Length: 259
Image (cartoon, rainbow, N blue to C red):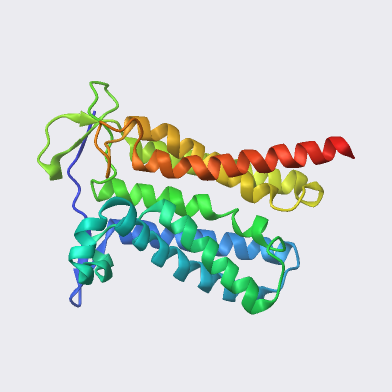
């Protein structure tokens, strides 16, 4: 059993406070950025394209993640206090909203650059599980995205919340699964990228990420919905992307069989 009594703040200098969550977020983004840039160079894709799409995706991810939290998890509060939507430093980002924001940003970018949707999408998703994993580690330092209480010896006591009982370490479950998904995607890319149909890696990521998110939700405290509803908000939001991925794999399997 581990007692989480770590301060959210690392240090303060010049009136600015460095927090663990922000540090983990930045580390995840930077590793993702440099890894994906390396893949672009490996595939001899234009690096100026990568720099512009990276900017589009970053902006889309942040806006989407914030609006996802606002409308998926606490719409009544934010609609009553709209100025609070802008106070992103107080926390409140949703991964499903981030996914929507990334998609919208990519659609805007391909319109801006006049390229096909399928041209770079499989490469761009490769590093995304890295960022997702580090964000979950940041959630651990923030004592948020909590697991349900457990009597297991692997539980975590969140002392900062005034608790004296252990919870499932769901932040680390999701972080570990995200890093595992990254290695699966990277292996598929190295072995089969030139042979795969367009969007295969993208839909593989969508399937694995949202399926594991759906499963881990059973060990997490509910957000938005009460226990009167059979599934959590995170699970309901994960069903559609998982089904879309399944439809894609069925489609390419049927098409391959016909040929």
